[in-house]
Length: 250
Image 1: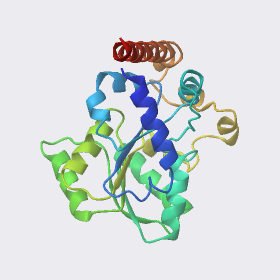
Image 2 (image 1 turned 30 degrees about the vertical axis):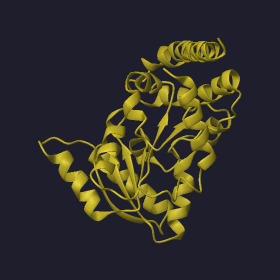
Image 3 (image 1 turned 135 degrees about the vertical axis):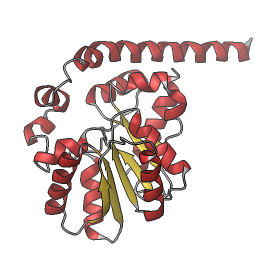
Image 4 (image 1 turned 180 degrees about the horizontal axis):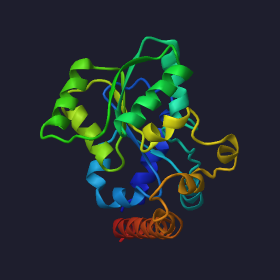
């Protein structure tokens, strides 16, 4: 994968946050963590259709800084990142927001938590992220386009959430959409999923391992495979760039 393009994209996205990010109509954004980096490598064309990529994970931030000299902040859509900034904004103005994702029971609990914490937020609607019947997904996309909320938050996991945002934009949605991973089910039990000490010491990934089922399989992926792949991609990108420069000077 061309790491130079990836690093340039996340750098530009970070520099646009929050002013341009929250006002650029028709834009769709997603976050990339060490696990989803594998998906980015396999489905580059899909991620290139996103209008912005944000880095979710301190390990990725540190590797980008180490190998590319770019200081990239961690920006994830949760209550330790972008969600706080967006929700504070919506709590003070008339803009609307719509949520798609998680199971219905968890989603309803999350909406209740958000309404309690942000009573001034104008929630235009919400729906679970499971489309069981043929045509349900297309109907939901059409519904959102006709409703035209200012913001849409999509939590279906990668790459389903990215595909949904891309199709939503292609269908004519004019607002701003963010993917949010597991935020919509994590927030069901409380508005702040991560304790303060977890955020302070950047232990969010390890905290999730002990609190969410089925994540232990990602540990090797995140701690071993991702650093190796990112380093490999960086080396190849630099070698290819060196070869091109050599051709120009020969």
